[in-house]
Structure formats: C-alpha cells, structure tokens
Amino acid sequence: KPKEYRHRLPDGQEIEVTAFSRLIPEVLLTGTAFRGECFLGVPQLVSEAILTLPGGASSAGSEVVLVGGSSRFVNFKDRLQTALAEYLDGRRVKVSTVDHRYASCLGASVAAQLQHPLIRRITKADYQENGSEVF
Image 1 (cartoon, helix red, strand yellow):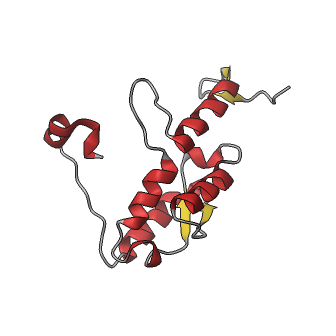
Image 2 (cartoon, helix red, strand yellow; image 1 turned 90 degrees about the horizontal axis):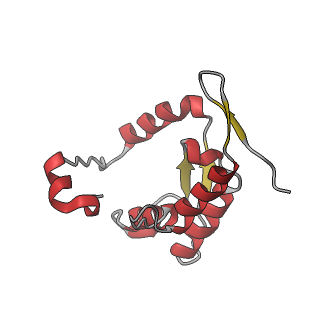
Image 3 (cartoon, rainbow, N blue to C red; image 1 turned 60 degrees about the vertical axis):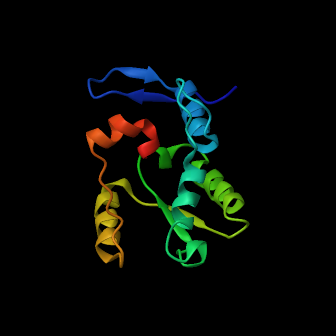
C-alpha cells in the first residue's frame, strides 16, 4: 500500500495529500495537459532556457539548482536530472537542491553575478495580447 502523505495547515487542521503528491510531479515532469492548458514540462522548459544562452548548452554550467516546493517531491530531483540529459542529447546536468531558508539569497547572489542579466518583464497588455504564449 502506498505511503499516505498528510499536511498540517496553519490553523492546525490536517489534510490528506497523497493524490496531490503523485499527480503534480507527473504534470511538472511530463508536461501533461492540466485543466485544458498545455504545459511543456519543467525538463523541456529548462533545457530550452539552457539552449537559448549565448553559446548554447556548451556555454552553460553543468548544474541546475532546484528550489521551491517542487524540490521536495519524492524523486523529483533525480527524475528531472534524467529528463534533462535526454533533452540535452546526453549532456550530464547535475540537479541540486538548496535549503529552502537560503534559496532567495542564493538566487539573488547568482543573478547579481550574471554577465548578461536575464531581465524579462511581462506586462498585462503583453499577456492579454499573447496569452500564455508570452511565457
């Protein structure tokens, strides 16, 4: 029998989240359609981002830092690493996680050191004109 996952809400109430803990990682990793929207999936989005860097995948570092709630899903990190290798033609990419307490500091530190800052602003007008394609 699969392990049951429970989560305690701020008000002290406990809810059962087993189905959620199985469904959401699949949507994130495979890009399955969800609620009528097509989602490419995290591996494809990350690999496309790496390939759009000047010099492509060869200029990118070989490490991706995974932060946020999704980094805590069971086997998410390992599955993402495997999927990235497939999208990047066998190139080995190490996927690491960071203690959540320090994630925002790490992100700001990395962004401050970028030679070519990746600043992108999406306005409401852009979104209304192009929909989810703007992302």
